[in-house]
Image (cartoon, rainbow over the protein chains, first blue to last red):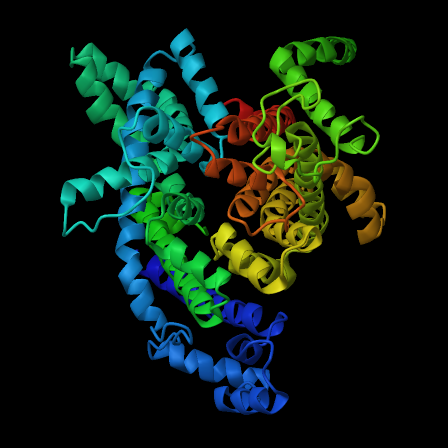
Length: 316
Length: 290
């Protein structure tokens, strides 16, 4: 196990370096000079040259990358020239909202997906199973921004049960806070549960054909106990990986959902930075999200190895 | 010997029948919808449609009528014309993007799977870097810097698709390269180029094409999401995503403005998913058994 962790850690370093390089290059090589953006279109060329010098933009690109990387390694991701806030402050302020949203969405997706998967696996091939598998396939073709609009129309416009937009901090009003997360989390969950259900269902069908399940039945154990204790755990291996793989999609979905429901999370920070051309915040946030994503994937890899001994000893 | 030949004959004779039955009605409905949208988008200039950009401030959010079959939008523009011209953008980006991914990713994957060694490590490693970014975040960041245009959008979404196509092509090449017909070609002294193009490519192409259709579905969704956020194609060009985004503003008074393009987008994505999934099951029997 230690050897496996070490191998993955060694592999992590070049990926992290390359991610930082790519983030830097996107911001540096593509058109749009930061000095012009800050000073506006009417700036004189003298002023622009002076600012470029102050910001080190006249240095060679490899030197700029190294000095930028040096700052990042010391925890300095840069400071917005519009609000004066550092990237880390801005991210720390908004991260809890995004994490709460993603956790609630994942919980809701599991709460919908797992019972349906079990119900389908028990009666695989039945009309119910075929209907649910079909619906899951259909749901995979509904992008987050479509289900968001549908949910807003149903619950906010027609029924008026829930707020369409807005955000209340948890510390001020816990119930109001949860209320404004219902529709956003549900939107993301609607896109997630079909994936989870399909994976768990096919694994569960395979598990239910194992000899030890027949043995448990023969012993006269209660069907619910067989399903939940004996069959669910060995079937949930792939579920863990898929949940990990889906985090990338979930992060993308979070940006869209935060924008639609006006939640002050990382996604809104990113979009705001794009619309106001706040390039420092944009670069810093993209790097932060990518680093977080790489680390999450690393943890999921390890978790998978803990669950499945074959991965530890293989060449994966 | 005789029984073996007989069996092969039987297989050949029955397989087309079995296939049509397996494809089913839904498959052909999906193909039909794809053709319908494609023809409508291609003939948008020829069809007797009102202009998709002409505004009529007196007839804003008008209901369906003889002049405007699907009514008018918030600026009095004809909804049907905008829908069909929007299909052009969604299909252009949705088809051309995956073509970039298919060509570059497919080529890289085949070369990596065939030559192995250091080249393979470099290709797989650099793809891992691309995959280290959540796709939508990377697309957003690059569009923000490059500027919004149909060409930029297509290129970005195309590049984002390269890793997935590379994986499919590499996996297929890895298994095929060990097969007898490849070894036979090598023994006959065929060049690498000949083996890659004449022996491997025809076999790798099928799973790649099935995957291509799924790629189209994903690309249409991502393009829709970017346009919905206002970061896709610049106005006044309409794409389905931007139409849904505009329709969201008037959800209380005229929900159809969001729902009509939403239904079109859903049906198109569903069709590509359905056809791609079916073809993938046909080209990869082991996976479909699950």
